[in-house]
Amino acid sequence: MIKTKWKSIIAIWISVFLFMSFFMMFSGCQALFENSESTGTDEPEEKSSVFYLLGNDKVEGQMMGCVVQTMGGKTIVIDGGSEDALAKRQLMDFLSENANGHVDAWFFTHPHHDHIGAFHGIFSNIAGITVDKIYHNFPSLDELETYGYRNAGEMKIWKETADIFENKFAGKVQIVQPKDVFVVDEIKITVLRVYDPTMTTNFVNNSSVVYRIENDHKSFLILGDLGVQGGAELMENCSLELLQTDYTQMAHHGQGGVNQEFYAYIKPKRCIWPTPDWLWDNDNGGGFDTGPWQTVRTREWMEELGVTEHWVAKDGTQGIKF
Image (tube, rainbow, N blue to C red):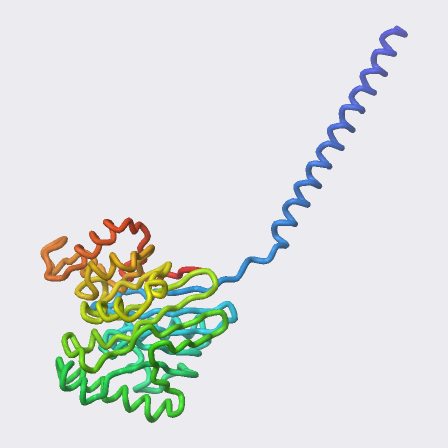
């Protein structure tokens, strides 16, 4: 009976010892886990600049609109999109939701309606959007009418946009020149070329101002709708170092713009396509690559150059942190 009593006492002590050891080990692990978790959540998220390609998934025709937002909260617009009601609404909603309806700097490449139409549509009425400064180098109305006339509707947009610049943005419009540099917070915008009035072939597309947009980490080349002749001029007059960037906006929506020689020269790393789905697939209603456009050929050029990363407006609005 005595032996049984001692055995019971020993068993109780062993149970207590094991319980305490387990409790201490669990408490230590829990404390370690909690310390590790709190360290992770206390670290602030690193800020970055963001480049947005506005979507061309709901708008029927082609268009180009881009927005850059700085780490300091300022907003830069490039072109903006077409006069289509959905394109205008998209731009207004984006600016209202992400920039409190304010643009610090608005840069234009050239005056075709699918680039300036949204701006024209917004500011032809009570805008609801404010703009600090506008930058462009458009040909004169006389030059546009002589060398770039396509229809009366577009000519009307050009004339009304000129009136908007003069009457609603007096003192806020700057005509850019090559080598101009503009700084908005951490973003630097360099003008690489402007239109040559003697280049009358494909006049309006070749009037595209070319911009280099960059911060300390990444860079973007904005070609607008630049054509073959403008691309050749750019290769001749601009250093390769400035033309080679981390991201290249594909000229003229990815087809009928600068040629294969130009892209081989600058060697794009990543491509930004202001391109709707029908143009991306060169589909005029008969299926893939049945249309008259050269987008599929341009895609093949990029594949040959080893480019594997593409942002395409057909997939909706997309942001690139840089």
